[in-house]
Amino acid sequence: DYKNEPKDRSKLLRINSLMPFQGEPPAPVLLETYLTPNEIFYTCNHGPVGVLVDPFMYELDISGLLPKPTTFYQDAIHAMPKSRVPVTLMCAANRRTDMHQKKKLLEVPWGNAALGTAIWGGVRLADLLKMQGIPYRTLETDEGGRHVEFISVDYMKDAPDEPYKSSIPLIHATTPRADVLLAYEMNYEEITRDHGYPFRVIIPGVIGARSVKWLKEIRISKDECQGFYMQKYFKHYPPHLSLDPPWVTKVDWYSRRPLMEFPVQSSICIPQDGLMIPKGATVTIRGYAIAGGGRAIDRVDVSVDGGRSWEDAERRQGSFPVPRPPCPCCGTVPPKVEIFDPFEADGKAACLKDPQLLRWTWVFWELVAKVNPPTEIIVKAVDSAGNVQPQDMDHVWNFRGVNNTCWHRVKVKLKM
Ligand code: MTE
Image 1 (cartoon, rainbow, N blue to C red):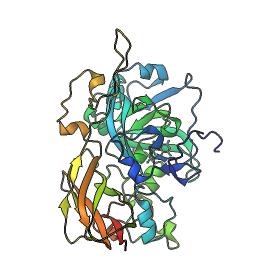
Image 2: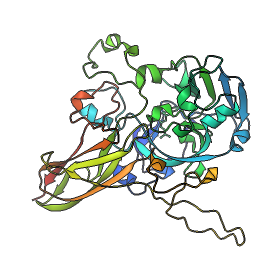
Image 3: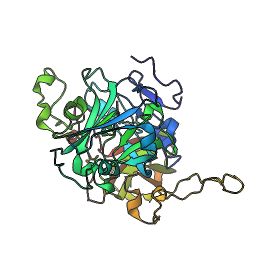
Image 4: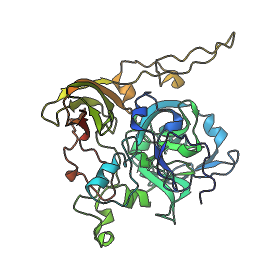
């Protein structure tokens, strides 16, 4: 039931579904800050917000096929070395509304703001598992574990018999560079209930659905997680499978793999669809681009004439205000500075010019151009592996409405 939902949700969030709560900010607001303020960070819940008992009683179980199964209290996790990693979380449902317009879907519609960036703070999962006797970069434990399952406490109407859960391969979880976190901090603040308090997983470069909130158990298992959202929901079924009856019986659920790394994506946030301007007006076009799996954005192409010609947009990544500790002698709190050092917590120096530092976060792009309406402004990005976005939705449309990464188009109309 929904009687324990947070009461302080931002009015800025546009509600796509109230119960369960799914909301996103207006897309132009996303571009105001490189780090998304916690209050307006998109929220995607599939059931009521998970309620774990009193935080002092909270216990996280690490169970299954490992040398040292353990139960941790919250304090013990907070006392472990903390890492801070900037990560853009993106829901596979981002830009789903456009898919609705193509062909009917049963799923909740989503605009192009189902993503956000935060500096997540917590314990690296690779370190936590190492403490439990699983060395870094392990493919299989001596006990036969090959996957790490994340199990929550919330139940959904789509799958009432099981809590929300997901898994990643053990080799992914035990690779320190993959930066998988057991997080309790979001932009230097305690994670809010909507975003997974007291603990959630953050799996950088992977669709948001795998970053389980309200975490209760980490289980080392032989097989991949068999949960509904792994095996039947967040998969990319082919465009020829539609909702025409009897669609459910036509789907071989296991014919596809669970979605993991997200594909290259870009979108226009400013202007929004339907802008009216006179002929030849100068327009500042802005948006975001992001690649999955830690790949970089290599190029952002923008067209202001419906795809006849293209220009390279200017790109910007990083540089955001970081709070500094108060002066030890007088207690004065210094102003936030526009630098960023995610390895600060580990006591290691980081080079700000190192492109690897921001491998999990979005790129903001901008192009100032003369536009002649009526026309379409289009964006498409290319990542460092040469992956491109598909031109038409026909190739990626699917009845779950996930991973819509086709070229993003915005119509501009003539103002007489
Ligand atoms: N974890 C639990 N326990 N329950 C959920 O419904 N939703 C998932 C994921 N983790 C979900 C969950 C989905 S689909 C996404 S996109 C992200 O959380 C969203 O995280 P956010 O709401 O903090 O932005």
